Length: 122
Image (cartoon, rainbow, N blue to C red; front, side):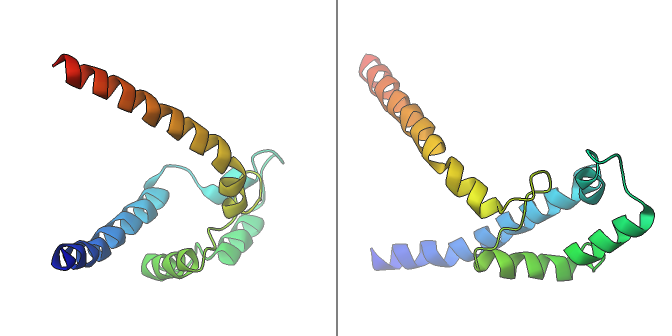
């Protein structure tokens, strides 16, 4: 049993690495510029302002450096700030967690109920 648990924990490391790499890649492959999205409501920004914000956010650095920075901040619990609301992403997740938990609980309850009924019927 301990060998099975240890094997699972060892396999979790490359899986977590692959997931973080996938999420990071998706953020950079999505069309559009996040810095320009920040200025949409204000009617746009000058090229100098955009360059300054890109520098402050570290978006002008090489991708591997951005990835390492992303991982180190995520391990510390710093998920950054929302581009639209400028609020902490951690706080946004925390404030919406009760509703998400209720929805997940209701969905799981229905899945168990219908799964059990359909299993009995089968």
